[in-house]
Image (cartoon, rainbow, N blue to C red; front, side, top):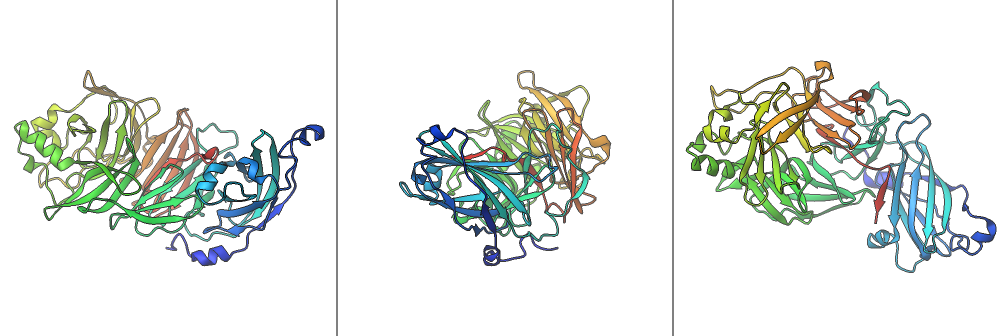
Length: 510
């Protein structure tokens, strides 16, 4: 398999990118414009500098009154026939100054333009806003080099998104093992990758860029949309061995999944932390300790359930619930569990009651009762709180694989589904509101995710299709009708173990 980036940074940076200043002008009359800062400017664009990948370029501007500009908006026109919205990015002058792309009082500014089509001529509409409220339009054109990759720029179009189809998102990013998170539009076009980050699949979008955790160490990376990579931080926790699986927004910072070495014994995939991108650890939840303490206090022998040194828990995500200051943790081997943010006290457990965990009275006492028909979580991934407040999971359907010999492994399904659950904590009940199972035609035993948008549309990532040889990204409208379906080759979960929408159609850097 070709690696995501087959060329060096130096080779990419040397690739020619041509930008043509096609014209300028404003929308006001000549008499009115004569008095505006926009009309009195003579700003021009210099030849560009290519970025670390062809999806990124740098446009240098200079000229009279540029020091009076307050913001810069770039709109990249979609290809003819595209159903996705244009990329639209706005930078404030304050942001550009903080990032070193401008200096206060200077009549020179550099714009880091991203979201370009690779190997194409891109029409760009640049609009400058000035302190007096006037604006100036500068149409540009950028021709970029091809991006050579045998996976991400070669999806099989199972169903293209039709023009006018209703979706609450137009871009999404893939959490991959291939070197960088990758942004794709809903036409299946690759629109951004950054610098190569070795040995990581753990990533998330956070405050204008991507934060990644190494899967071989405590190293933290910050990857910006301009392609720059900062590798100066590491988790301030010497017992942590590496990141694994997911990183998600937390109460203040980010919540990770990590392996921890405790008294010489590896706590395998059973610890979550909240951390800041600079490495500061704010909180830690060791599910082995939490469950052991609770079980022992309530009459069970926790050593029969909590088994350090093996993958008895298999945490694949942990998310913060601001509604009651709690953390919801997904254990593929067992259940979904909600714990108190500060104390770690168990609020509830929800899962397949035919699994081994349900044989312990103390755990059974915390279990929510499943009311009515539907699918209970089995081998679940991608746990989220949907915009309607329900708990949503990607229901893989894979039975447990690390239970003690002879212990029940629980249900197994030959298909995957997305399930939405309404939880009544007072009544201690849970009801499945709906599920989407693609007519039970698609299996994805591991990894995978689902994200619901405010309009009810869904991004579904079947990460492990056909025994791990394919990945399917699917967009569903609010009625769960398929709006697009794109199939990628993969090895295991490497191409897109998880996917999330991202708002390149209205991104603001302030």
